[in-house]
Length: 245
Image (cartoon, rainbow, N blue to C red; front, side):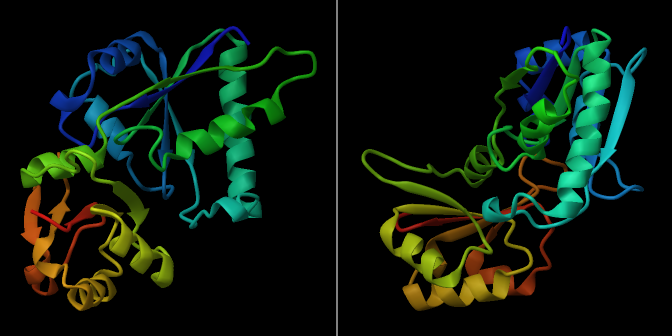
């Protein structure tokens, strides 16, 4: 393969939080590959990129990934695997022609990014005799960091310990994390908010918990968890639970 596949973190939403390296590579790559959760949907990551990088003379390669929950022990989900392989085939075709591809992803690529699933199957669709694919990962500002900054609070100090978990984590393991760590960050709490609020109340942690909605994006809000029962939260909502504020 003569082209490189760049997985680029573009930050949580504010275009000014995109790194200089991310912006440079996105300007240099002729082809930008973006995932969509639905065929009619739009890429949030691309909307951020467009505020920094001109799309003139760019080829936008849109790839549809079904909105299906992924667990690491269920990575071979037939529908998702088929989608990843199809996308990988398209990417390989571009790389074989010498094009560098940029795959912009929200926040940081190492935090729950679809890009790594795609990169993982690229070797499976390489033509016989081809060399390995060159994959370059460019870090970005995470929604976790942006959420803490918006709330004006530290994630950890001194020897404190931090855990970052999906809010849909199994109840017993979530309780264990909330009991064991000084700070727990819960991602995408919008669908399980009532359950989480009750759990925090029982643990005496409700008053030291903050919800940040759309961190780094237009419409960003910081909400006390104790008032959250009155709210209808956006998909991009993160909760920070600290034992000490």
